Image (cartoon, rainbow, N blue to C red; front, top):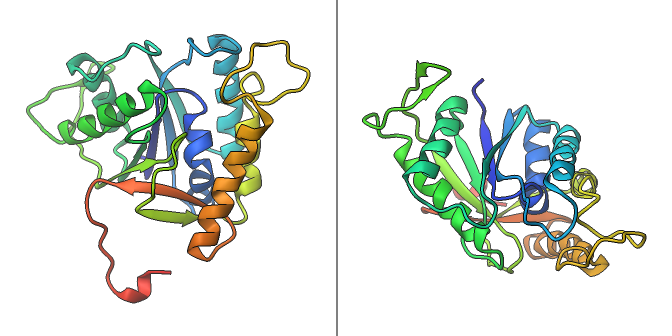
Length: 238
């Protein structure tokens, strides 16, 4: 299956928090989008890996993505080496996306920055035909995505561009809340974590509204780029 966009997240819920509004909008515009989670989030303070597996499945249905896979790397301990790069390369070559979305380049959680660089490096390496990979016994063709964008997570990184997600913010919220074990629940007996407070959920909504305010729309999500963006004319800019 060829996808238009493949989004990578170090943990289940990274993508929902960072770029699910954009994903839902692109799907509504007719694009095929898939998700690959690097880990199962087994070191999370709340819930279990098994619970998050189900939550990720529920969130994928809400967003309407074509496929969601998990590479089952070690939460907290995966590194950017050949073994892990090859896992990501196999996914890129399997789905042949034109665009890859990946974690923030720098963030509070160490896996986010590591995941960002791992996926970015794999996107380049995936285009080298001398690197051989196979999937289900069949040799894969080299493939390099045309564009790699990084979504924004805990830190307020200044975006290089924003996507207007007005009209899709409610679906984004529903996808986030599919992770019932992770986010605010006044009746939960689980330990508190940095993302389990009501304030954290409010901050996600505020960021979308603030980026929208700064760009002249109601809601927006921000991204950083690895190379200059090019447009055909000034009229392409909003």
